[in-house]
Amino acid sequence: MTPGGRLDVLREPDFRFFLSAKLLATLAGQMVGVAVGWQVYALTSDVLALGLVGLAQFAPFIVLILPAGEVADRCARTRIIGACYAVQMLAATLLLAIVLTDVRQVGLIYAVLVLLGCARAFMMPASQAVLINLVSRPRFAQAVALHSSSFHVAVIVGPLLGGVIYLAGAGAVYGLAAVLFAAALVAMRQVRGGRQPTPSATPGGRGAVFDGLRFVFSRPVVLGAISLDLFAVLFGGAVALLPAIARDVLQVDTVGMGLLRAAPAAGAALASVALVWRPIRHHVGLWMFGGVALFGIATIVFGLSHSLPLSVVALALTGAGDMVSVYVRHILVQHETPDDIRGRVSAVNSVFIGASNELGEFESGVTARLFGLVPAVVVGGCATLAVTAAWMRLFPALTHMRSFPHSAREPHPAAAPDSNDSGAAPAAAPKETSR
Image (cartoon, rainbow, N blue to C red; front, side):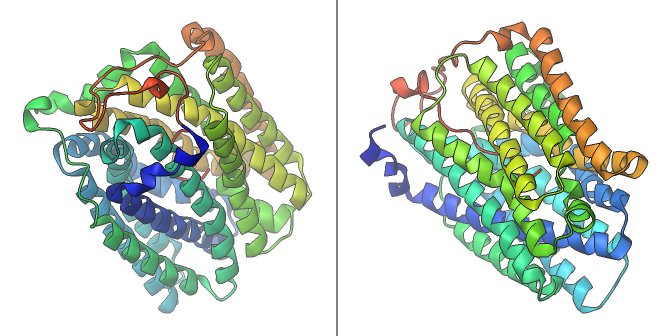
């Protein structure tokens, strides 16, 4: 890509509307995340309650995600995403109603989070699989890079905005989030592309749900990449504990917590920009393992910190390290997967992502209750380093991978793959939920 052509993909209307909808919905989701975490901890003063925030979203997610992948291969993916935005708007409205009626039962908040988990289960496979169908193949690298960058902008701005607005009350956050979800729904309805594969390309049957699992387990390199992320972040994630750390360790308010929550996205965004201009071409396996190791080391520093600036820097480094790992995994999965099962493979990838996030949040809450806040974070960072070392030995092909594999699968109807598909790989789509 020449410098003047890096934004050519914005000329494609479907991508513009999709990107706008994703930006608005992510902004709203991050605001809700800040408000829910602070509200639950204010009601309970219990770190385990913060862990249950993640579990409430993970339980329906893990049940629905594989069927959702098959749905993404059989229905219009853009319509699925729009329906999920509608459900998220409903959830934000219900949270607003809980605040306005002054109901102080945290169980009702968990019930709404279950609804959000259901929406996320269907949205993740559809949104991961649809992007490649909304743009011409020569512009796919641009699309992924801009998708990544805009997502991180929302993840940076959303928590900060949510923390500031929370000073006026949780209801103000939930009300604005509901409006943003509604705007995302309107934008998504303007997208005309991203239709499902033809029925003949994806035979049905009970076993079709597990096609994604069979595909992933038949590709050791892909399995190693996504399972590394699962186990490393399962132990190393600390976002669930941010309300407790902000209030009890760093002694800051919701604005400070919003800054902490935005820091990983800021680091990831900077790494994403670097990857756009200087994409990884050599020693991709070592780059991925190095990114995960950086995530673990920075998590340890964050756990030991009692300074807000140092904590922000440490969290930014976790985001930068994570971005490199996501970059490699996303390229491997997208280029190695045929389009007719891309939704189901994306669902499997989403299982690993969801387990590393929501289940990791629950694990953080449990360990913090048992061992204390600081030991829970530090031990989690050490576990991430141990997993990195183990995976380098378990998956030597991934460790010694020098370049991304060329994919000549199913060129986009608009154009055949250009040389960029085998060399300068695109920046990866980031995780759909903040750690």
